[in-house]
Length: 334
Image (cartoon, rainbow, N blue to C red; front, top):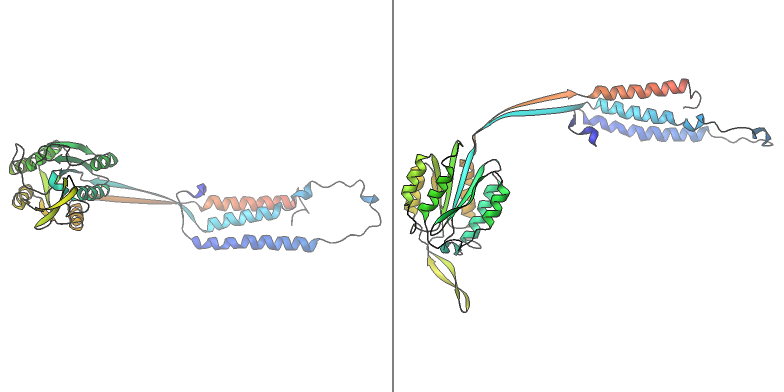
């Protein structure tokens, strides 16, 4: 009911008293039936000129006014209150660039359905859980480019993330270039915390910037890098297209964990190893906890009593009934 938008009640139990209204109405109807009787007259001639009183049509106004007055009084007893609250919030903004490997080896199916799709789906869940952060996306293979710059419009980011696929750029693994591109997107950021999440399943074999050099650049711009190595231990099933359809071959998992660990260490981040979908989810959950913004909140709450208007309405209705009963409708109201 729109009348009660933004209204709270201090004593909701008083609303049980509303049951009195139908009981009072039932008693009134019963009483009216008891007052009715039969009148026998020898002729109708004496009533020939009698006119139906218009006032008698309003004989039930009394019970209506009493019922409305009682309802208003019950609302007043329940103590309606308008609740106004606000808060002063100070937050340290966080800008996050995700740098994702989209090389051919990311099609290996030790993750479900494969490393690339699993990484996309889990990262999208991570993005949706951080609505207040600016997040962007860099993809890399033999080279790198920005798929989506830093944005607070996460719907756009999610759609662009969903569109990435292997083959968008020449194959290879340019980890240094991917990291450098992400850092370049963050270098002018005024956020108190600047973060890169770098995901790869291999070793750097392309690009003009070595990974450690990119890490040193990140450090200069106060960018913290969390590195994630994707791949099971040993060998992973890798789909190969043949004239006879898709065949699978065993592909050795070759992640340069030493370099990824060093990147994280130089920048003050952390290295993680994901061997399946579940561990990757856990890694994103850990990063989510590590990168929670610091928020100082001062909350204020003000309640305003609003029972008086309802009490006045009840008094006006009862006064109106009393006035009508003793003046205009005297004798007609019960």
